[in-house]
Picture 1 (cartoon, rainbow, N blue to C red):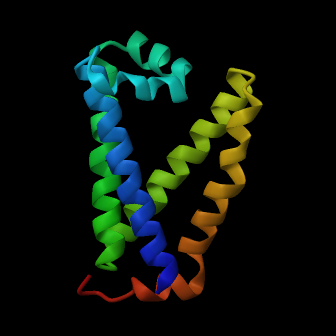
Picture 2: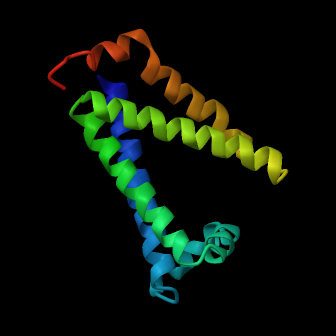
Length: 133
């Protein structure tokens, strides 16, 4: 199913990017620091978290990697993990929009909502209803 392949690639990309963020936070001043120019506010926010920023981004990276693998293999746990990650992301987007008055966070709502609706559709859930997975 092409949609599951696309979502698996999406979560793999998320794993790489959050892992890169963790590495940039862990080793500041590296030659890759120019990447922060894409979102300098994120660097400041993560830096304020101190070591917890690294831990958070490493956890996100691992979770995304497992979701990617689980979706690729069409396992029930991969489906549940991917849905859980999307729900947490949607909650975060809503919180950012409301608490920080950042309307840019709202762009993630229809995108994440569409991905979650796809994963929760009857047709897609059928791929994960195998007891052996």
